[in-house]
Image (cartoon, rainbow, N blue to C red; front, side, top):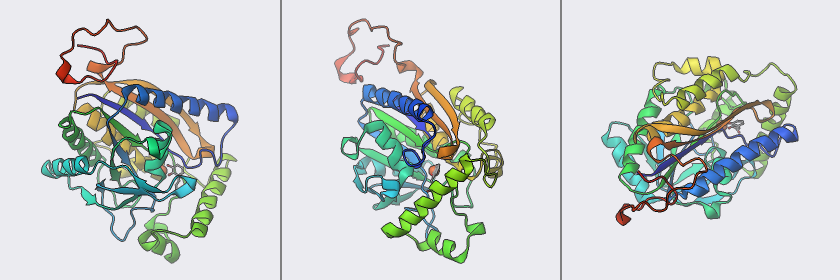
Length: 342
Ligand SMILES: O=C(O)CCc1cccc(O)c1O
Ligand SMILES: [Fe+2]
């Protein structure tokens, strides 16, 4: 099965609270490179692993994992609001396969998603209108208690096997920062008002959203100006994480405790689970090669910001050399255009 992967950080502060122009330009060039990679692959289906930030998943009912059979963007941080194109049959097939293999995913016929899903998709496809059919898979990365990270790997592997049966060109997306600890509320330290919001606070008013989002922007300003009230970014930890994925070691986090992620990378480092699932999915089809690896700690965006792409080794795109013309591929195998013949 033709697969490709893009795992990248997200930050809703992009465009709202930018670092120096040369740094923002550098990241946008990397995202444009990832977008070109996706255009060349031309996916027929996109499997997206992403977290949520108390917009679509709240303590009223908090699953560890949820497959969306239909999904709507809440439109936080000025992102487009409204329905997303979901391949409902593929979502059910994935859920069925995950459940059969012992991964207890929830299923939603009306999933609400936030910037965690929508921002990387927009970077990779340009607009909601240009999105191919999706299978959105939520991974809880903020609402404690969390299970072990190894469960995200098992989820990803089940998803990878399920989609292998589709025979389609599938792009796997992982969305989340490496080390980072922006001010996302925690039940443990929540005031009664905040506890109420992260339990029942679905669909806030535009004004409530504005206030909340301007607080995130203000906090990023303090962090970037040197405030030590926040867990610092940790480039050494992030390099360790990227090395693990680059070397194909998708089990690297199996023995790591949830506390380890927090101590090394801050609370939102749990978003690495989306990468563990994405690379786990890719790994089910054999060895892979990381074809892009970019990293920079960016305090203005509250993120150890990384962009990676990967392909299965067997179908790695040739480096600039033209392929010998159509080495008589059997027609029926529907190879993606421009992928190397075996
Ligand atoms: O609005 C929120 O709750 C958090 C926003 C946010 C900021 C920086 C990096 C992230 O990954 C992120 O999600
Ligand atoms: Fe996030």
